[in-house]
Image (cartoon, rainbow, N blue to C red; front, side):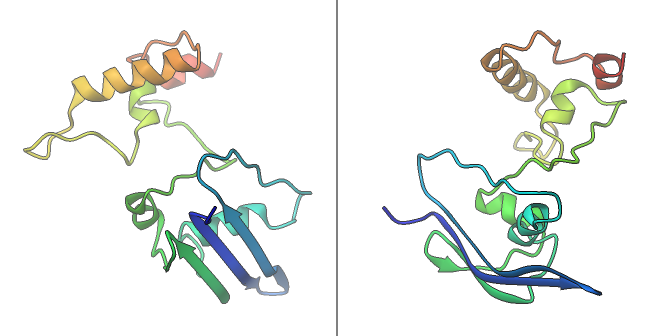
Length: 145
């Protein structure tokens, strides 16, 4: 089985710190994976290189067999790559549905947010995860009690 995503020989350094040295990662279709390691092992750096938040100093990224460089999270999302950062923060003034789809809003043919679709998709996700939050509930009131 061929990997959907391959990172090979990835290097990333910051002043005084070599965060990644020859790092590699393969992601295969239909498989669940976890990237685990000690604090400072480079997990977050690897994900930020993958999504274009950081530019790699060396190495190759292959997506669907083609060498690729993502210029930021939007370009990696448009290609179909999404990650959830461990430092994910909610915007307390937004609803649960708005936070779920922040940056990936559903739009209609006029370029306006399709609230009906967004709320329906939020309902599906919340039900799938067996969460009893109300999609229109403001997040700050939902999680910070």
